[in-house]
Amino acid sequence: MLSIALAGKPNAGKSTFYRAATMADVEVGNYPFTTIDPNRGVSHARTTCPCVDRDERCGMENCHDGKRYVPIELLDVAGLVPGAHEGRGLGNQFLDELTNADAILHVVDASGGTDEEGEPVEVGEHDPVEDVDFIEEEMDRWLASIVDRNWESIERQSRSPEFDIDDSLTEMLTGVGATELDVARVLRRVEYPADPQQWDDEDRRRLASEIRAETKPIIVVANKADVAPSENIEQLREAADVVIPATADGELALRRAVEAGVIDYDPGDDGFDIVGDVSDSQAQGLERIRDVMAEYGGTGIQQALDTVVYDVLDQITVYPVENETKWTDGQGRMLPDAHLLRDGSTPLDLAYAVHSDIGEGYLHAVDAREQRRIGEDHELEEGDVVKIVSTAS
Image 1 (tube, rainbow, N blue to C red):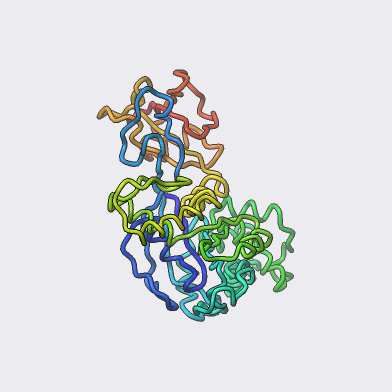
Image 2: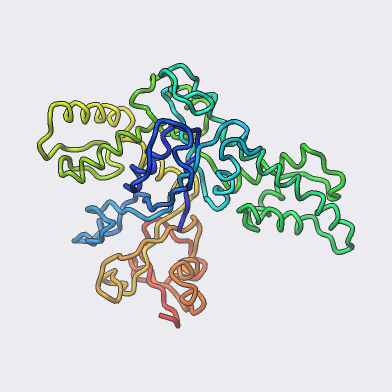
C-alpha cells in the first residue's frame, strides 16, 4: 500500500490532519510532541470510479455514487524542531520513521501562530515562509550524516580489485528507503569522482540531497488557512513548488457532522448540504468552513492527498476483474478492487500487484472497456478495467 507521511513542526496540525483523514482516535494537543509513538492509519485517495460509465453504480463501500476512495497508508509521527537531524526533540525517531514513506506532506501553520520551536504564539507573529524548507533541510542533513558514517567502509571496499562505486553506493542507500532504480536515476544525473577517497563533504551532501528528492518528494500543506492572513498563503505559494491551503479543523468538523447525520458531504467535495437540525452556533461554524471551501475549492485535506498520489507520485488507478463483460469478480461484485500503480505500468505489473502467483502465471490480459486482448507491454491508464488471465487464476 502506498505510504504518505505527515511531517512538520509541533502544533502545525499534523495530528488533526491525520485524525480528519483517517477518523482514527488519536491525541491532539496544543503542546510540543503530542505525538510520541507514530500513528499509522488508512486514508484514501479520491478518483472517479469506472462504474459511472455503466447503467448502475458498483455499490462498493469505497465508492460514493461514482466517487471512488482508494486506500493508502497515512503516517503521523512526532514533530520536528531545528536540529532534529542531530537528535534534538524526537528527531532521530521521526526521521527513521520516514524511511519507508513514499512521499511527505509538510504541514505548515499558515496562520503564523506557531514559532520555530513549535510553541504557540499570537497569530501572525511567526513568518510561515521560514518553515517551508525546514523538513527538506533536516532530511538532507540526516541522510548526509548517514552517508558520512558509512564512507569509511566504502573507502575500505575501494581497495578491492572488484570494487564498483555504483554497487557500493546502491547497497548503502537502499538501507534508507531508496530502491536500486532510485539510486540508478540519481547516479545518472550527478557527477562524482570514481574514487571514494576523492569525495569531499559537498559531494556527499549533494548525493544525500538528490536521493531525498528522488525518494521523498515533499509538498506543503498550508494548514489553518481558515485563520491565516491571505497574504501568508500567497507568500507560501511563492516559496514552494506545490502548496495546498487547508483547514484540518474544518475537515474534522465536517466528518463529525456527517457521522451525526447533520450534513451531506463526501471528502474532497467543494461544498456540503445541511440536512439535519443544527444550533445557531453550529450553523455559524459550518458557514465559516463553507467560506473557506468556497475560496480554496474544499478543505484541502483530500486535495493534498490526491495531489501527492496522482500528481507527485504519478499513480494511476486500475481495476482488476474476473468477468470482463460485467466487470465483476467471482462473487459477482462489480469493481471490487482498485490498485494504485505507477504511470506507465503494464498488465503484468497489475498481475503482480494482485498477487505474486498471478504474476508468475501470467498468460495475457483483456481490456474490459474495449473487450479486446492487450499486450504484456501495453501501458495502462487511469480508470482502466482489466481481466488478467493466469495459470494461477
